[in-house]
Image 1 (cartoon, rainbow, N blue to C red):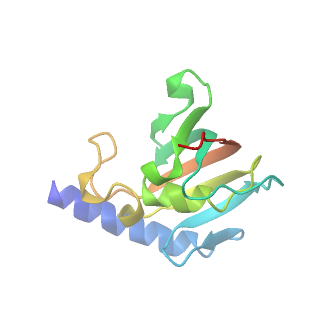
Image 2: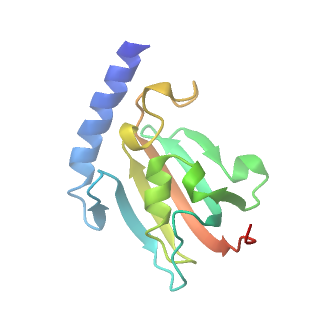
Length: 139
């Protein structure tokens, strides 16, 4: 397991070092990389908001490990404080009606404890379309 994790970590670091030099790719202080595919003009979510999104998650080799298509193609809702750190940070950068691509390093993803279909220390690639911020009832 640790051998696969070490390889995934090295592959991810190599990929991210090259990727950050590509036009349009931005890197945050935490190491999250993103590219604006479509810039929306709506409000931006806060870390405590629930959001409605369409998404596709792939590994660096292009294998899809999760997507809204796998769940019937309908938008899904997430609380931004209940997802991996790379998602929380990335989606909080997006105005509603935007579509961004994220490259999430292992430390902002699942790290060494990733699900089997992802693998330990994998760098994740997500395309996320932010459809809406879901209003929460005051508790």
